[in-house]
Length: 328
Image 1 (cartoon, rainbow, N blue to C red):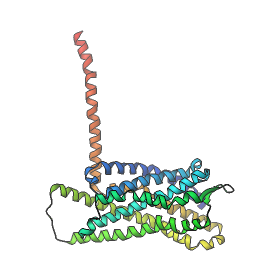
Image 2: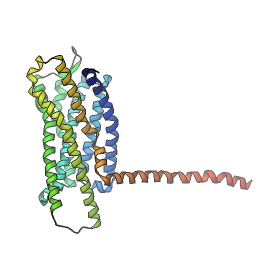
Image 3: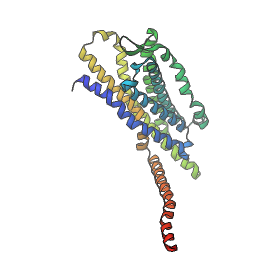
């Protein structure tokens, strides 16, 4: 198999695989975190919900881009909308992930003032802002992106905005800045946990508060696992983007083999980055025993409810023939 064929196969199959895995997981995350009573008391749930909604939108956009009839190059409208929403949803997903990391740092801080930043009121107020802010920032994509008929491709129609997007908006806001924020807050949260672990101060808590604290610990564990995985997924793409920007002046002198290899690396790093948007639920599931128990309990209750609903309907069907026979 040639390098070009490998890049083409990865470009075709990766959206299908990611959509098939990621969308069911994102919907399960939405159901579990919004219906579980203990989870609803954690501010992080708002950020998890926002990230799950963004993940579903990202995976849907990636899938639509891989279909020829709905790709960016089919029409001017599809070009503008797909570019706009891809930038909006990726930036929103990374923002909610950074907010989750920030909330876990604030929640585990020994400072009362910092812990007050982790509250349901704060999370409710912040929740709509990523969507609003990134919608406003990405409006120029609706103006300066269009299909060029001569090459039948979706391109920038403004040279200045093209430079701003390629060198600043896309790499900084969607990859490099979130990577830096995630790394910083992950280390700070780990430091807070170590300080709490090594402290010998023990507090007497009521049972309800103890259960709430246990869920907060589980949320912290899930968010740290998700943050570490996101850093690992984002790092290869960040390195490739830095390389692309640094070698932009020498593109005209590249050989065919170099172009094909860079295309394959581009597809590989993009696939690894996209794993970040398709794996959140599975990371939560693997890193939290409490979440696994909650899901098992919910499934057990669901099947028990269905079983109880079947019994009353089967009783009359079995008694009517007996009654009729007896009267006869």
